View 1 (tube, rainbow, N blue to C red):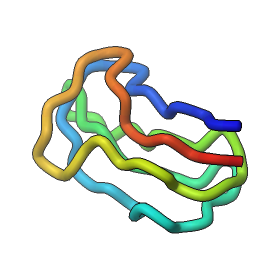
View 2: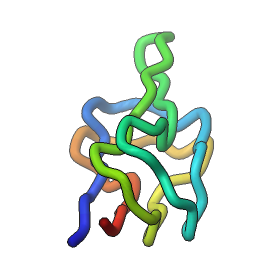
View 3: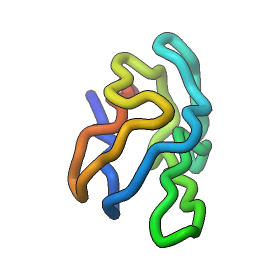
Length: 72
């Protein structure tokens, strides 16, 4: 099964903490999005393996944009 991690708010990706192939725990920080001068960590909702990464630092995302796909 797969979990798609989506951006909960619009903003700029300032850091990406995982890579394709990484094993992540539930509540692991996948990336950080800056919005209104605040940094917002984006967490994995499941424990699994990162199968796809759709963002990189410096990219602007909209609400609902795909950030990563985690297979569990």
